[in-house]
Amino acid sequence: MKHIFLSLFSLLTISSFAQEIVSEQVLKHLNNIDTNRIKAHVAYLSDDKLKGRLPGKEGYQMAVDYVVKQYKEMGLKPAGENGAYTQKVILRKTKLVKETAKFTLTLPNGEKRDLTLGNDLSIYPHPERKSVDFNAPLVFVGSGFDAPQINIQDYKNLNVKGKIVVILRRVPENLPANVKLNLQYPATLQEFAAKNGAIGVLVCNYTNSMVQFKSGANNMVSNGVSASVTAKGKRTSSAAVLGGKILVAGGISVPTLQDLMRAENNMLDSTWQQLEKGKYVSKVLKSSISGHYESTFQDVISYNVIAKAEGSDAKLKKEFVIHSGHLDHLGIGKPINGDSIYNGAHDNASGVACALEIARMYATLPQKPKRSILFVLVTAEEMGLLGSGYFTAFPTVKKSQIVADINTDMPTLLAPLESVAPLGAEHSSLQKVVETAASIAKLEVEPDPDPSEGRFVRSDQYNFVKAGIPALHIKYGYRFSNPSLNLAEKVKKWREANYHKPSDEITNGFVWAAGKTYARVNFLVSYLVAQNPVRPTWNKGDFFEVKK
Image (cartoon, rainbow, N blue to C red; front, side):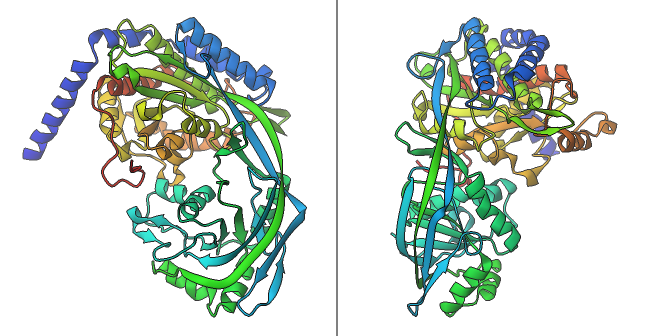
């Protein structure tokens, strides 16, 4: 009985709080969310004439111009660079030059062994340097984590300054999917290494076959890696390469690492077994590695598109709640059933359309919330979250003044919206905000229905999280008053048939009324944050909490 009483008290408190800061006038205003406008935005952005909105191409610029036009018509203020609505982003494709690459391993007995790409090493091209020479001792650092939050400190009591670390790739199975995927990004391992002073990272995937290893090595030559860079060529964002003090990064094959460990009087198999048991296996090696490699650059110019609705409080209007979403898609690619234009209607014209309608609601709201709202539609999400990475590195407002990010990416408007899953909200006080917003919108809240996908760290909110800003991404929940709808199965089949394919078009499965509900609940989340004098906070000790 006591538990029931407390639950009812909690609901009443949330309801009272909601009524206190979301007035009847605001709720009535949200009835003006227009599904026809949402549909019109999707229709334009996913039209064949935009040719898949690939950054650097004419079609993407058409999308930028369209969003700028919408911002202007709404009366939103420009919040990009130099008093404009845009922020310039340089996107760099870097490829490895195979012919000039040369690497030598020096073993403890002085023996020198030439290493070859594809058989022994797989090297990422460097995003900042066209030519790299290195010569450094090796240090084995277990799984390569410096993460006291999960009790793994592979760098403990080791001096790796000026050295190259060798990592045996392993992520504990008992970690949450968001944490696991975060730790699997190559740049994350490089960040740990750089933080401890290393100049290089070589990762061995013990479970990969040589066919997979060779394919990865060849990919660095044929396709390379993508990054956003400054005008001076400094890397700002990439999931694959850190650049900077990390001069060499890539992989070392299992046979090569077996030979290296054997020369160090160690056995790779037994080291792996110890690592699986959670044992500390890091050690200084007597071997060293030297090498030379070259990279080629291809840069294109793209843009983030940014506007603001200024807040009403004299002090709090200097702080910002962000609505973000990615404007780009995949462009023109391999034809499927005779169609080569990857229109990206669901991914992410629909997210942009909802964000634009949210922006219109703020622009036409008679009494603005206390904090300002920033609308940030970014480039190059599909290339590795590069536009949002650039924005969080060089925000057009002070980073310290950004209090939260609400990201809209591929809402998947395939059915009526009855339940929401706020990806990542559980890491911060935003969870309570979403619960309040959902209660006002008469929606259920459920945990991530597909936790193994780790989607919280796979879209643009991830870069805000890495910058220390609480963030979330509201996805569809799968709970329905009519279980026979089985949205989970419907989404699974839709994704298998259409995700990142030319068939992701406006004719494919939209339920437009769901867009209105989706825009409404996202608006309510940002409005609640904007009205509350207390900033959102990370949960104490959370893995993603950035110490300031």
